[in-house]
Image: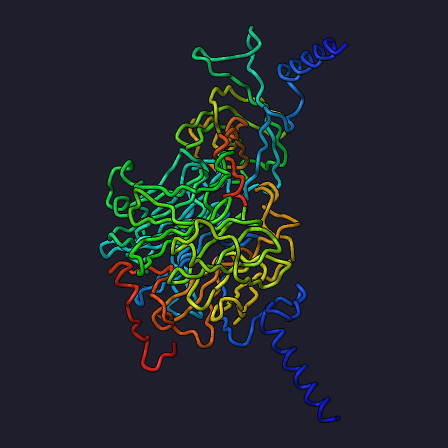
Length: 164
Length: 469
């Protein structure tokens, strides 16, 4: 009985990880997105889902996991209301902001962009001219990949850095 | 009989007046929270600047000490910026400069926390510490160093260096710029590991290779080290003319510790203060001669404690565990940072604003003046995460965050998390030199030109004929 229940739990766990869910939530693959002052009504969240692969888990040739990014957004105004912009574009940026990769266009509702194969990255959505290959417009939504929150025990803010 | 009642009535009125003037000295009634406005008679509020829009406005504050440089630096906290004000007219501070981290909208953390100015080879610098969370850009950034020699011209203020410490993401919470007796300008910084770092500021601003900047560290001897925690939170470094030692007074997780940093590359532990209730040790400031100290522990309802350090300083004990007295502005709250200008202690007392008490009798601290700067709702202080605007419904950590005192004229500046920059004077406090009180002239103020040994005996030149001390 216990073994059967354990097996069911494993199957359920595998299902949760490998299926493409309807909407991002607060799990270990989810990225809460935060708005900026330019778009106070914008809301968003993203989920990393394994890119299509005959092997179930998608990786690059050198072994980095490849993800599509499912983005749920709402409250984004028409891009032109922010300036001479035609679209919202999602970017994956390294945490030192030295490397930016264009992931694709984003609209209100669900968008799937990607693929991203960085380990730790920022997910940044900006307003841009149509077809922009480099980021230059204002940021409207941004979040941090779940992997960026891993930290060694020594740096855990048990004390310093939390209270002023 | 009528005369008796008349005298009794007058006495009661006098006691009542004292009660409203003297914070929570023994026997004094507490103010209700919504009455915490304005200040006591001896205090004069010269100016107030709302330094940012929004709920949170400032962390720590620093004032320059040279007469010809009337500049105040305000750390912008979660606004991620450093501001410089010209206070040549203390009644009307003028903002000269405002520098914000690049791409601020992508950063997450508590931001610009502590600022210290220093002087090397006739050039003035300002070090702004930052704290960004793991996963945010600049999580490895500790401080940005500006050359501010060209003030008041803001176009002449330049970033000259950035101190990064990737081994412990999360930045520098507190810092201390110190003119060491060996002539070097040193920069002490907290990190998330169980030690404080010591940088050579001369090497940093002269463009020396980054691997030469860090010259030493001071371990925190806390038992919390065993579980991987136990960093310092704050510290004070001062010269002890009696022993001719440079001494580090550190507050951190587990308690307080005093180190001999005469050789910064090889710090030697002298003694500790550990005891019940001391685990969350926050601030540790000694008297100019190192005999007494004021400490803070960072939790609600706790007072500032006063210690006699004699047994530790003379080597009679390795640990001190019993304070000699305590002081609080209001037992329901918490007082935060402080600056000692013996016998006065200037306190940035969170919800209780600026508070000043004296240690003329260290066993009986007395409140001298106060000004409420927070004007906020009790227990709605800083907490939570950036996602809820750092807003808590239980914390008393809001209001007066940092305080600094200009020694040559006794000007007091205060940074309030809720309300910004404030400038004050207190009657009877028109300058400070420790020698006037039978103490070495030692405080957080550094003599960048002459070093601490000469500073300890330096006489103050009065601001003008007839200036009161």
